[in-house]
Image (tube, rainbow, N blue to C red; front, side, top):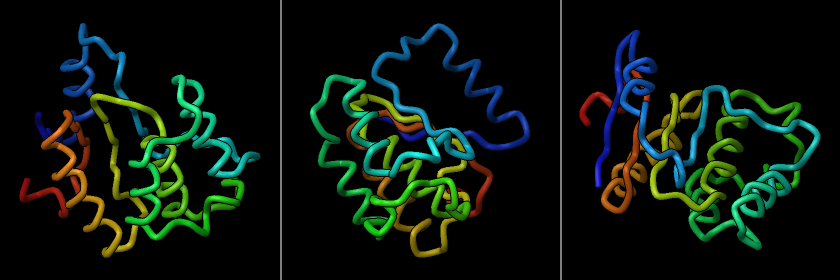
Length: 145
């Protein structure tokens, strides 16, 4: 599988062009900023994302992301009052609550502190051994990939 980092001012357009004509079934997307339902808790949104794809509950990967980001405290809170970093963590949890064969992440480390950003980057590199991972980001953390 592959890890593709899209960089530069035209990165989103390059990704869109790359995706044109590709089957998007089995793709999980995370825009920046994440699109969250501010009235529902993160846990409710994760379950809804899983249910919409025929699962009873989010897969273990979502639990792993919660632990990786040390984000358990966010699960029982609605996202309307979250900081940018908390929004990003919630969006990642929801994105990884869906079954997928490919994941597309726009600025996945936006708003995260250095520890979480590094942990997420390392996780995404490992994840790319099993699935296709596309990242749009100009952040320093992905410069070496």
